[in-house]
Image 1 (spheres, rainbow, N blue to C red):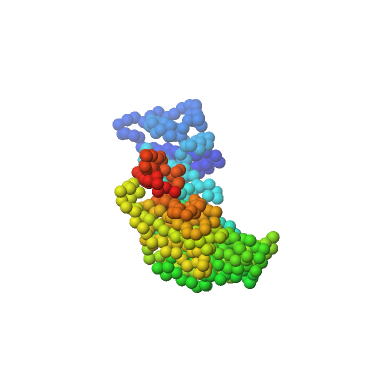
Image 2: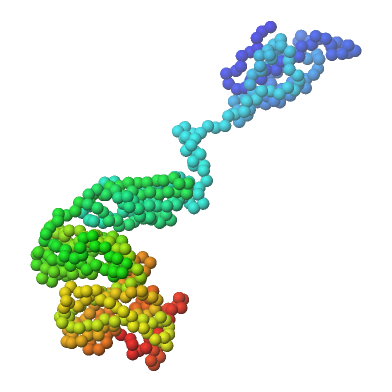
Length: 477
């Protein structure tokens, strides 16, 4: 018997095997008459008819007299959306016993489409990962310092800035030459001025996430100091001075400049620069110490000449035993032979005048010489309430104003409160009335919400805080 026809090059092929009839269907039935030789052959099914329909039609033709050709070849046009019917197995070749009627055909399901070329599985999975509810994604935490990796400066302080990328930080620390400075982990950017040491300085930022994983970034800052000169010399303070708990938190900076034409020098303490007027080559400035370590020097430049700088002096502070307020006075010229008394009173409740005011001690720091007025006064153990700072002069007073600044302690060091200029008279002169812990002057009308006046008193108030401050008219500056 001839071999089955080969599959077509295009389109699915179905192989249908006819049953082999050796005996009549039933002994009681007569044999069917033979087919006529002139009977026309059946037409080949149209390719447009589905293969499943053709197979079903062939199964319904159960007439014993029908002679089915040895093999039937059916071709259909390509249909990508339809299942692919595989060729019959080798057991279905001509001469092999056919399978039972209605046996399923072998169908191969189309494969699922693969990922696009060049799209790694990890990358696709990362894009499919749900975003963080905080909107920062699930990428790893990174920290980056701004600016070049290597930099050179002639300034003793450097501003360091950076940013956080990716995940959420639990802790951010900036290490400057191994000294740790804790930053806020909730801010995505940071900026801070840090002191430098002469030579190379290492600045390293470290961010730690909730899982304890660290991310860091490192830069190097080269601090090149200007050449030292003996044209500016610091007389005080001594290098290595340490302030004890009972010492007032101030240092007096005094020095000389060789060039008498220099009228201004800059006294630099950590990251603060203060202009100081020179008199006959001499300068003096009082600095409040609010940090454990203070590095200071004096520098000047004339007519674009190279910067002249004194040696650097280091002062350390162990902190004050009690909260201390500082009053620094700038005396006008001609005050040296004048006797001036500086005093203060304290009232515990700003909204009550029936509470008597108490006189508090206001000791003075020793002046530059025996006959020189002191320009530093300090209050030990400052408390909430109203402080009234006064002066009383004796002798011939110069017709000039006295300028002064009051420093009071707070959570982040000392706060500066400049006072209005005051003209000294022969009697008692009120420098200022200060309300602590707010550090507000009576003259700061813009801080208050309103004012109420009577014949003898004036009351200022602030809402919604509920702050009320009353004073007698006779006691006002």
